[in-house]
Image (cartoon, rainbow, N blue to C red):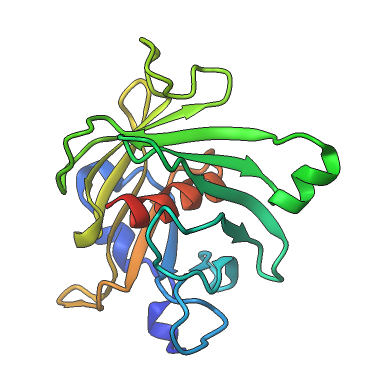
Amino acid sequence: MSSKIYPSEIQVKDGEEQTKKLVKAWTVWKKSSMSFVGSDGFSVYDEDGKLAFRVDNYSRKNKFLIGELLLMDPIGRPLLSLRPQIMSMYDQWKGYKGSDGDNLKKKSKSQLFSMRRRSFVHNRNDLLEVFMSGDGGGGGGATVADFTIEGCFKKRCCKIRAREGQVLASISPKKVSPSMVLDKDVFSLFMEEEVSPDLIMAFIVIMDRIW
């Protein structure tokens, strides 16, 4: 893999005003690290160009057939499992710590968050909402979302905002020079220092499925 997809200072310098405070500049490659033909996943590299997370070998099946998606660390240990809610009109997903196998051993599922469209009328610029466990989970009540996601994932241009409105993370096309942008399968991820990269990456994996 070319070193050009690794993070650099160019994105931070050229970032729009709202992303200048986002001090972590990571790179997301929309390709499985296993590199099997027909595989579909993500490889995520930190500021030093080291593999931080991976999602390997899931197929783009109908959501009625797909099982969980696993966000893993570099050596393949499951960090978060992501599951679609089949009958949801809002394309709701739920995130759990570990994997289904881990949760079966514990005889319970440790739900971390739920994520859904704000509206059941689907369009490319739908707002997405994230509810952390214990905050209502997006079950239809008057609960305010802990995070909102705006933009267009297909164009690799999205912002993740906290409840108070500040931008915590954003994605944008990957630049290797001020005038050269890479293919949309490689994009930049900017994050504030205090956010959890694994949680943000879980949101991105689900965005890829919803949008």
